[in-house]
Amino acid sequence: MDWSECFRETVKVVPLVASMPHMVYPFTFGSNVRTMQLANKRLKNLKKDVEIQIENARGINDTPTHEVLGWLDQVEIIIKEAEDIVEEYQQLFRCIWNISPNLYSNYNISKRAVKNLDDAKDLWQEKLTIQVISKQLPQGQQMPASSSKSSYLESVLNGVKADENIIGIWGMGGVGKTHLLEQINNALCEEPRNNLASKVFVVFVTCSKEYHEENIQNTIIEKLGLNKSDNREVKQLTIYNFLREKSFVLLLDNLWRSVDLKAIGIPNIKEAVRYKRKVVLTTRLEKVCRIMGVEKKVKLDILEWEAAWSLFEKNVSKETIDSDPQIRKCAMDVAKKLGGLPLALITVGKAMRDKKDLSEWEVAVKQLKKIRLRDVEVSDEYTSVFKMLSFSYDSLENEKLKQCFIHCSLWPEGHIIEKDDLVELWMGLGLIDMPTFEDAYNVGYSYIGALQTVSLLEIVDDKFTKMHDVIHDMALWIANDKKEVMNKWIVGASTYQRGQQIVISSDTEIVSVPYEVGTSFFIADTSTKLATFRGIYNEG
Image (cartoon, rainbow, N blue to C red; front, top):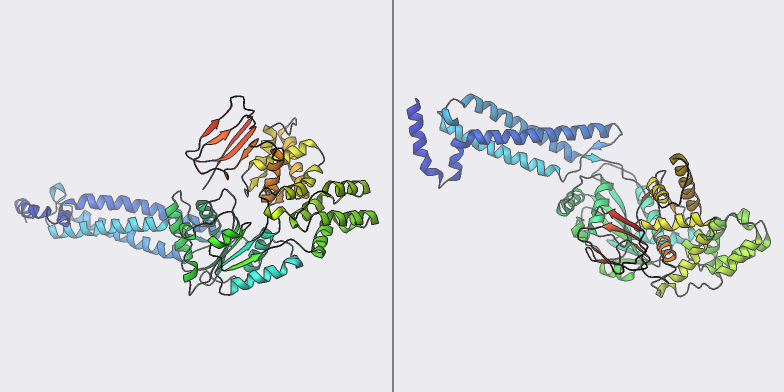
């Protein structure tokens, strides 16, 4: 075939292009092949990144998932196919203007290049929603078992093993809901760990007043080691694709409102046949259980006297209580005043741990004498609980340590606090003033240790600490002059809708809120006492 014949064939085909788009393939095969090459180059680089991730994971005894291994096999096939297409294209590239003498071959190569390009794009998108590494899921912190709560633990575990799909644990703040959920987590994580197909995944998510669906998505993705994304729909699909053919138990601690499990990406809990799908939640509000469709409700009550005394005695220590018969008598009076609330028994007990002077116990009895727990459950303010807990605050050794404790509440409720960040905040506020940074960090860490000793802060690990949500509320209650001055400290965004204007009054001294796009601030009085403003990046 000479050049004139090639041209005549081209002229014959052109009129068909308008009515049949694929007929352009013989004339666009050069650009189609180049576009395919670019897509495959990106896919090769992505494949290399995944292989490096797998190699690094194997170094710490993690393993690649079957899903990602299958993905790599498919990528290899597509890349090899693209290389074959390029080789054929180069052999046929003999006609001017990218038109070879063989129009059928042009068409065939162009069509295959377009198909390969589509497959490469699909594999790129698929990578966004597959899990690369199979990690050992972190277990909850092991908590000491309490015989008084063993019946609750047994009840919930029986529900998980039975037909109840959603179980709700509810009760007042400080009654031990988180403790119980951690015990449930521990019990479930102690089940034999088999292969991925038969394993029950246990995911513990700590929520708060500020939490919404996207926060929960982020925590689930992090704990399962899935691919991160800034797009809610991609997160939803990522979680759904991972869990849809697996058994799992989702533990949601401290829910303040209902959440949309479907929007998070949780497969339909009630349609599971082959797989075990359970949700166990804790909340202060019974209505949350109702709205979430809880099938089994477990209410946690305050402790009976014997259990309450045992818990208090354990935290004070028998050595202190047995040091003087009168101290034992006062200790029993203090324990009775605390009304069976576990958090108060633990916190006040630790505050009195080293008090072997009878006069200190007599003062404690007097301070707690007017506090009554009976009205707490109908009080949104939790004033009686805060008064009991503030005894531990009042027992701190100096005013500087008290101020350091109060400023721990500038982090959102339920937030894990990095110790270095906390110490640096104290330094910035002038609460720690030492000649060198090393000295300042040492003092700061000693303050954190002192607060953890009396349970005003909780131990997480060497680098992090946190506040119990009721302790957090109590700290803000103290910061706001025990509710005598409203909005003295504005912390978190639980009382505001996302993007709503936050009003700073003349009494406002500190603002510490999560940064939200669209949030605005209105200074109602130019004589405001505002001295500290913190905008916290909210990952959700």
